[in-house]
Image (cartoon, rainbow, N blue to C red; front, side, top):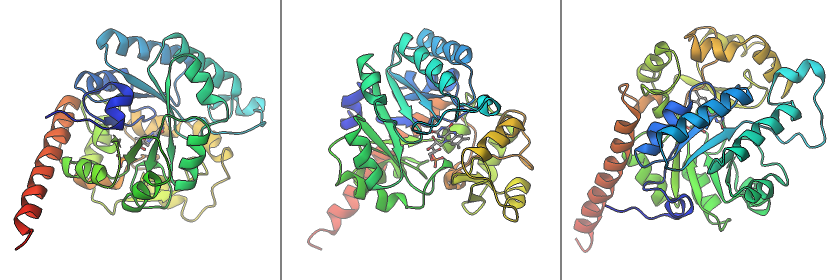
Length: 338
Ligand SMILES: Cc1cc2nc3c(=O)[nH]c(=O)nc-3n(C[C@H](O)[C@H](O)[C@H](O)COP(=O)(O)O)c2cc1C
């Protein structure tokens, strides 16, 4: 079956199924596997040095000629400049941000995703390099603003999502965004099955952005114990917390999130800088401390039943969506006029 949506057209890909950028978890290996299978792989560049990013992009470009993306977790800090103590974090170091962007421009990466607010001028700059730009949004208002700032598509992130997320459910957010903007809308949050893909498209999305399900693949660069958590957990074993960065972020419930229910996190970006200084995200995702470190995880953890290759996951999402659509057409068709 040939799929045609605003995202397959925009990026020239077979399937509008995008693997979410996930810091630490999504390197070149995962991105290449997804793009090679007909989806859109995405390197999660937060916590990489420019040299590491260059290496990961080179890996993808050697492995596939298909489009792929790089996801940045840069906030829009306006005129704010970093103090030397804060220089450790991408979140607050403008020099490091500029170097990271320069790597993507030089390497002619097809797609950049701005995970936090799209800074003014960022889309125009990327377009000069022939790069497509997307950004994550949690409300229709932010989607309209992103369109005004030149985004080529928005990724509407429902509250179900792992990592930074807002309060609006995907079932409301996607149609609310789709009716306000004239650019393609990608749905994120809680999508881990083919039926979920079909449902997102039915709500008005042109594609999907899937994190948690791809976290549990062999190609993700996390500790095996993190994959095991993604398989084992139920839908009520994640929580939205400001403990990771000062902004709302969905994490697996554990001793880390429990501690921060009785302590007040600092505002963003100070909390992010502190957690970064303690190396806690690496301790969790890379070293497998799933008890006392932050583990970003979506509610769709409930729907992840096994660890698979990324290509198997992509094929399952595609086949499952096609089956869901056929099944629904049959059910509605037989009901008509009955
Ligand atoms: C382990 C993990 C790390 C993440 N890191 C990032 C990140 O660095 N940048 C970003 O834009 N989003 C990040 N996210 C959020 C994802 O990009 C995406 O929005 C989310 O996973 C989609 O929801 P889902 O997990 O329900 O599929 C992360 C998510 C997870 C699970």
